[in-house]
Every structure is written in structure tokens, then in C-alpha cells.
Amino acid sequence: MRENQWKGEVVLAISAMKEFETFLDSDFQWGVLMEFHLALLAGMIREAHRRGKKLLLHLDLLRGISADEFGCEYACQQLSADGIISTRPKVVETAKKNRKLAVLRLFLIDSRSLEKGIALCGRLEPDYVELLPGIACGILGAIREEIRAPIMCGGLLRTPEEIRACFQAGACAVTISSREAAEAYRKKYREG
Image (tube, rainbow, N blue to C red; front, side, top):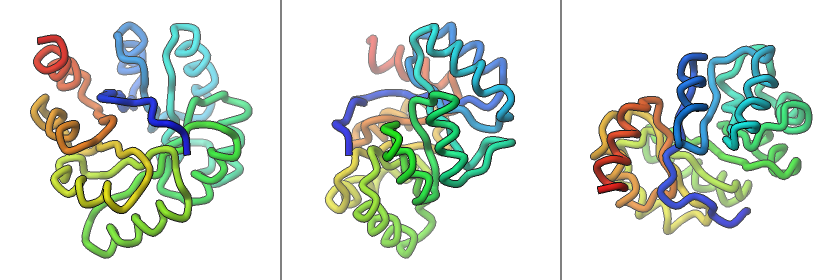
């Protein structure tokens, strides 16, 4: 597990080319790509790196690349992704072996999924755990007692106040698709 490099980081979830172009011109440093086709990824990553940005690939939600350890190796070695997000243990393990940021995504749908997720974190030791939905951040304190990895929140976050609640609950980062909400959060809570 890596040292936590994120403290209050807002990571933009990007699923359209226009969102990507806007991200490149923004002051956000990190983005996560999803819903893009493999044919576009190499050029997008090169351009992001040229502009000093870093990109995670949500391997489970990309097209034309398999969401398994072979797709992960390709993303890490050939595409030069900065990190990988996945719900799949083998993918997270492969990202770690390739010395890329390895983020395990966990969906909290009930107590059983929480128990299984905590056990999986203990076995995998991902660099980060992304908990969804982010609006369930009230349970973060209990989870932080059980796992060693820093926790990110994402999913169903719509307002600056919801982003702030995640950070106040102990999240090190938040993933969000609404650039407007992310910018409003920064303006309201980080700059003011």
C-alpha cells in the first residue's frame, strides 16, 4: 500500500470527450476515465500527461478492453495509465504489480456487502478504497476502523455540501461527475 497522496482531492469522473477537454483546461489534477473506447485512451492519456494531469482508468466501465488482469496489464504497460479503479480483485492486484495506483471500488448495498468488502480490503491491501454511494459517508468512521487503505467516496454526490460531508467523515478524496458541483465546493469551502 502506498502512502496517501490525496488529502481533500476532488477527482473528476469523465465519460464524454467534452468533459475531458474541460478537465484539461481546469485546475483539477486528477480524473477518472469511463465509458470511452480503447482506441481513444492512448491519445487522451498522452495529452493529459502533456498538460500535467493524471488519469485513472475505471477498467470495469471502458469499452474495447477487458476488465481482467490482461486488460489491466495493457492499461498499465501500454497506455501508461496513472492508476486503475476496479471492483475486481485480480485487476487491483495486477495494478499493484505494475506499480500503478490501485483503487478497489466497493458498493455498499447492505451489511453483507460491507463485511465482504472489508475482508477483501484486508486481503488485497489496495492503495485506496472507493466507497459507493458517497452519500453513505456517515458509515465511514466504522469502516476506517476496519481497513488500512485511505478511503475515497463517490456516487450520487450532487452538491458542495455532500462533497464536504465526505471529507468531514474522513474521506481523502471524492470522485464526482459534476464539474459544476466540484467547482462550487472549491469556491465555497476551499477558497473562502
